[in-house]
Image (cartoon, rainbow, N blue to C red; front, side, top):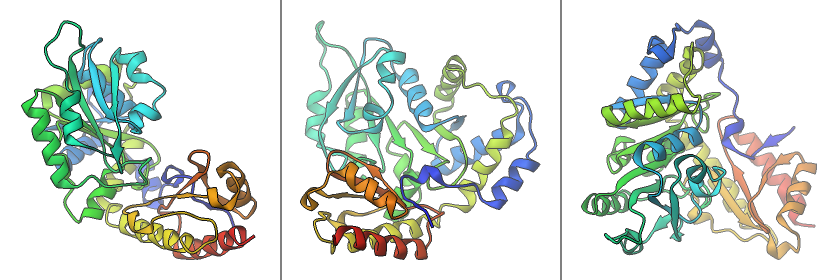
Length: 343
């Protein structure tokens, strides 16, 4: 039995999602005539507490449209040093938006507010204008860490005072909301715009949502068109997105529990370094340096035992729990990893 812990992007759509795709009422979305897409966008905007929303093909596309809509070429954006927009989006903010990135090191994905304020440019002919602050919640490379509400509020107040827009890469925002025990609106209210993925923990096969002010979303829609993201009878992929938002949020707590179980078991294994108390959501990152093997070597060993994992640096490995991983899978994975790391 193969246990795929590489990412929550590997989930398969539920039977209900497949039926919804087959039965979806469709129209031409470029003309805003797809009733299912319209329903998804209205639902998402309401859940996120924003005026409007836009259905996009992926989280990366959503983030890039956000940067393009918020900025002009030659301006600067502020990001945490290991954020997804900076680390995993192929330099698109430079290639597409023509903006300069200024990265700020964070602790578990959180940038020190004083460092953020110091990084905002003053009025000087030599400087690019600081146009946008980007946050990531949960933070992938920080092991699915959640940004506290109080922290979000401080940064948003700071940005507003300095006339800087705030965008949140909330690919796993519902994981953050479940972990905090709050409505997702309580997080989204501390940013101007937000992107959420439907195709990760929420289990839809494709698609993301970009949400924000109505006038801003109208501008974002044009950028989506420019990027080739104008879709036609897109209701067939929007329909499972509706189910993702209405039926798949509460069960994220199961993924979090499974991740904690993995983390505490790993902490007992020989040569593994991990702080299980830091596991807040569905991402587990652990260090194998003390085993004397590299991350790549351990990933191969895991694969040979039927566990798919991701190398996350020279000695770090990432595991991600999701809806297609059950309790028996977790117990089997722990047993197999014990075999590997006891050698």
